Image 1 (tube, rainbow, N blue to C red):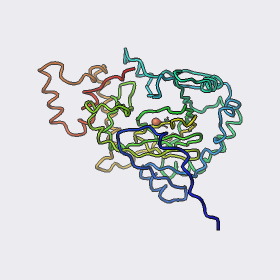
Image 2: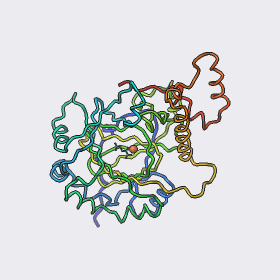
Image 3: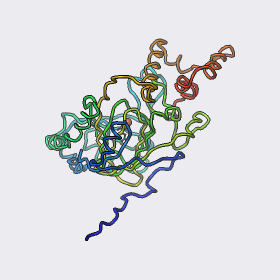
Image 4: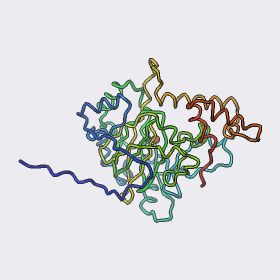
Length: 358
Ligand SMILES: O=C(O)CCC(=O)C(=O)O
Ligand SMILES: [Fe+2]
């Protein structure tokens, strides 16, 4: 009888960046394992190893894409460093004087390929992040139609998710980092080329991660620099505890809505290609108490939006805190009397909010 050799791990520990917090592993399971259904229905992350969700995209090399993508524009971010921190361009307008740490450019695919291939240390790093749309050529449409829609639609139905909103194609250079943030949709994230590490934190760790105020261009992004955490400003980051996995071709991660996530293309690992499948969340039917941490996050967002809109001046919200001695009782009230919900929303995040140094 043939014995199967244990499969060798196709990446090395030195390809992972080093951080200060502890992590556990996200479970890796085949589709046939009934735990997959259970975890997804509980809103818990899981890596599923054999969905064949985006198998036709395994052949999407740069050459293949260049031949078949068509001549549409591809949104690509340019960054001086390996960090690609997303910003909301609409919120930039009301946040005068702040220039974001990366720039979005629209390029034709061959230009992207040329810049990636000719990259030299010191050049700006690139990260293509473009929604798949109807400008792609016929062959890409054929590949797309052959994705495993029956499998993914089953999960959409079982979990009562809303419509598929978009598929983002991500092509990143080795070492690129998408820093920690959360999104407001359910995500089945298909890895198709190269290896990417993902680190997740559940919504219950909101108070360890200090997302920017909602009106800030970096809304939904954590303020803490994972590579050099400032524990004075963000003391609870010491208590952050993540879940992680390295995703390779054919792996699909269920990334639940409101879970914080950080992605890194492995160091010295070449280009990475991934495709997101974003779904609207299930409508809330009956509310049960206590509310879940993600429901509280949604509430906080609404309250912050209301306050910002009511005051009609983000600066007034942000510079909360004593401006003079006579204001100090306000801070006293906030610190001593307000319950954990308001503290999580305000302390550290609002009292210590600073723009990152560009
Ligand atoms: O792959 C990445 O770099 C970021 C992906 C991400 O943030 C997402 O799929 O929500
Ligand atoms: Fe995301």
